[in-house]
Image 1: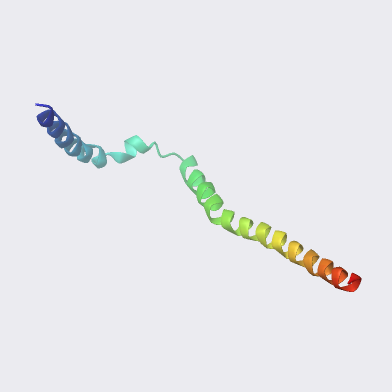
Image 2: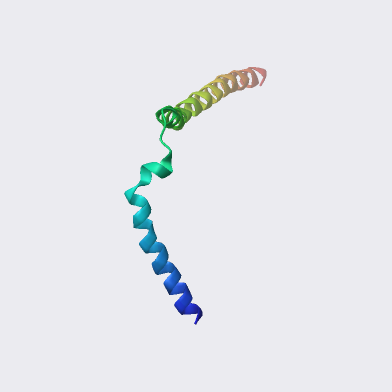
Length: 78
């Protein structure tokens, strides 16, 4: 009995999805702000790795520059 209800519910769900796809613009509410929202969203996604790379590059570049000076001072003391 439960299997029949489950199957009928699944079949009903798959048949109703096509109805909504025929008139999808009514459900998306596309306005003039939509392209700007997409642009800003994609801008952050594309630019975030570059900003992260720059921050990590500077962090490790300054870290490596400080380490050899300490090693030279240690060798001079020995």
